[in-house]
Length: 272
Image 1 (cartoon, one colour):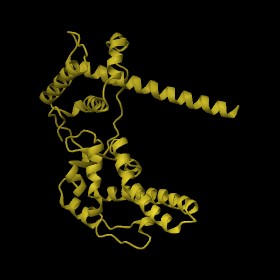
Image 2 (image 1 turned 90 degrees about the horizontal axis):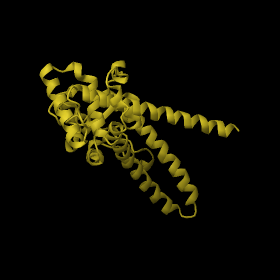
Image 3 (image 1 turned 90 degrees about the vertical axis):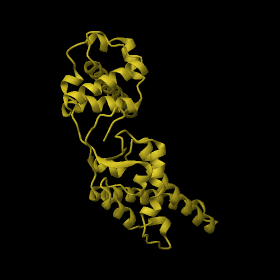
Image 4 (image 1 turned 180 degrees about the horizontal axis):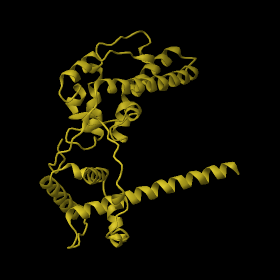
């Protein structure tokens, strides 16, 4: 796949079996949510059984569609099932999906699900065989179902890459990492820019020298033009990007530690 900078990265496409397992987990979650909602609606609408039944069907469709759209849009292409199996939906270009892609790839879900078994209690279980979606994904070289083709997305298997110590704790330019202006500009980076910086920093060894130089030159120029970063004359393009990645690692570590500290304080307050 090509990044917006036209540098190719390799992603491992998710297999149909792992996607099916992720879907089964999501289905169990959806059924659980719908059952809880049905119990609440039944109790609240005991005096109006017809209205309660209609409300249950509406609740099922809202949960069934909203679950995938909301989680994939907010959780960077993952649902609970995909996260459990280490899968993620991304755009064909390799960048994270947005709300539009999440909506588009789920618009065709009713067609991908065909043939569907629709009993009288379909709003509770909504079983389907996914024969259409499964067949299309099987025949597609990128394992895309109809929704993926419409949205221009693919499902990939995440690679757990450990952040090298040299990236998390660089031994040079420590003064730049402590500069308030530099840190403020790092804080303004968008999630898409952060993802691209980390991908380049962690996978730079996989690239040929020419592609590597082109990637970091383009990234450094974009960071200087769009994010107003200043690159000292003695600093290479790659080193600038790596320092920004190190600053992002430090910031995320600080946030994690702060969150843990707040959690400990909350538990201590509850115990008192």
